[in-house]
Amino acid sequence: MFGYRLARRDKPLPGGQFLAFAIGLAVALVAGAILLVATGFNPIEIYIEMADSAFGGSQAISNTLTQAVPLGLAGLAVAVAGSMGLWNIGAEGQIIAGAIAGTWIARLGPDLPGPLLIVIMLVAAVVGGGLLALGPAIAKAHLGVNEIITTLMLNEIALRLVRYLVNGPWQDPTAIGFPVAPVLPEQAALPTLFSRANVGVIIAAIVLVIFGVFASRSKWGFELRVAGSSAQAAEYVGISLRAKIMTVLILSGAIAGLAGGIRLTSSDRIVEGIAEGWGFAGIIVAALALMRPSGVALVAIAFGALRVGGTAIQTQGVSDSISEIIQALVLMGALAAAVFTAYEITRSGSGTGVPTGAESISGSAEASAEATP
Image 1 (cartoon, rainbow, N blue to C red):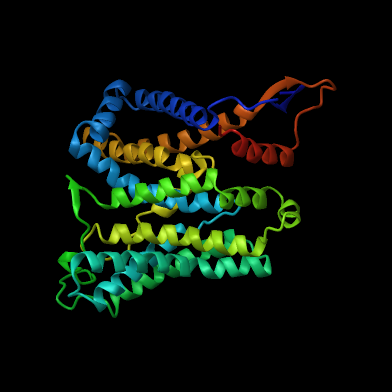
Image 2 (tube, one colour):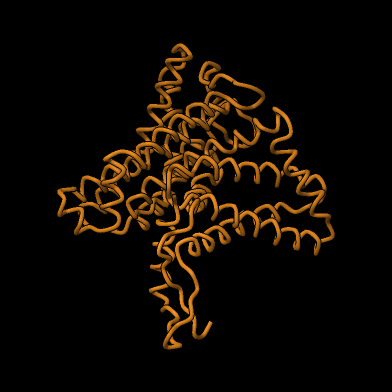
């Protein structure tokens, strides 16, 4: 508004990350309720159905966790890169690369014992995702090429590669109808915990906790934040920017590759759509977590619940687009709330204190970084 401007708070509001997400969720639910009423549905009944389908019993919880695992790992992959101010937009392709590498191991050693085969498949998936991120890492670290462009383009290459394999050298000769890859060995399936949830939940939880702690409490995490905030400051204290860029982008790809490995060992075969959009959804998860690995798990569970609930309400005639709109509204509301946890609207003394476009964008990015506790 004319005569007002955004001014940085002396101290960010406490609980910034949780507060921003809570406000975003509240805004989304209110806006979603209006949309549901406009389309002839009772929002209270719909929201109760969504909550029950996501958390109402062991089967519902297992469905939510099954969705949350790839969302959490993909979000962590993006957040790890984001901790240094980098954007990995290639998690979708890296998930595919991880699944391809895991399938390759299963084809090489179909008679290996189950635990050994699963471990090797997951390690191969980590390597596969990391290798796909190697090119963008080298290009960024040594040539200064924008990582957004390179990681994004590699998504298409990974998709084309899995399509070629499924329709070509890996095609099941006994399949009738659409071409598919052969079924994986029975012992390649991750052990089940309860209902649909398997050991992948534990693996993802361990990885999320480790990176959450390292990012917030270790020297490594501190160096990432310094390097991301100021290249000059990083060089002054002896931090190698090239080494950090290489490490972070490859590590980010490896985490996404692990998501692909877990998805593969949770299904019976590799398919063209093995990534299921998890990599792109991970960008939203990381953004809602304000690029903090410590907040990714909570956001992933919430989004997993939204996905499960969105599927469940379709049986009542509600379009699946409603769930997608609510997810988008959560993102918009949370990011807006993150700005106001670090900034406040004040009257401009000159009456012309409205920030320029560049200042607004810069302020939003800084607010996202400072809004965490």
